[in-house]
View 1 (cartoon, rainbow, N blue to C red):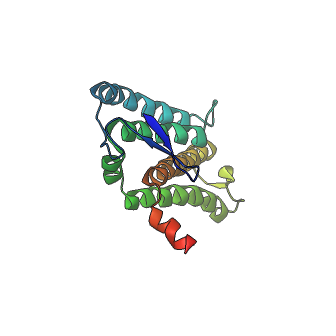
View 2 (cartoon, one colour; view 1 turned 120 degrees about the vertical axis):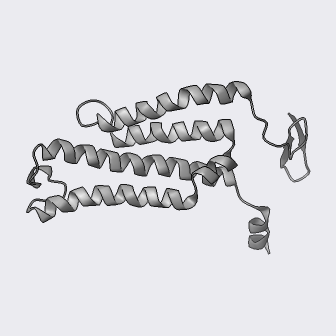
View 3 (tube, rainbow, N blue to C red; view 1 turned 180 degrees about the vertical axis):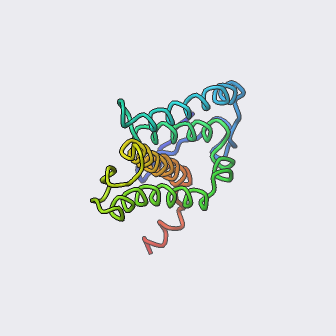
Length: 167
């Protein structure tokens, strides 16, 4: 990597093969991610499901699951991962997570309790199942948010937007 300075104070960084060098696949990184990603995803699901009984929960598990998807994106390319997990799929997952969270809370209200008062729901062990479902909803929302923010940052911004503001 080399650096050159322009007169306006902006440094220009280029990679050895040029600034538009395409993504280079590393067989070592790809093989490692193929092996590690399922375990990281499983750990995230475990932390998500056992948040009511032990350390962890929806937020921590969601971040771990989101990180597993980011590993896949870094190893196999952001473009193919974005094609696999499209914007519409991200939207559906966020809506699912919010609906799951709201559904459990409103089920308690409909059963005569307060919002998220799990014991008001007339199901055996409703507190345990209610907490677990809320944790899953939160985990889905957090993981998809992490992935969506990553995709937004990876997309960057165009200089055309800056030129319009300056004019």
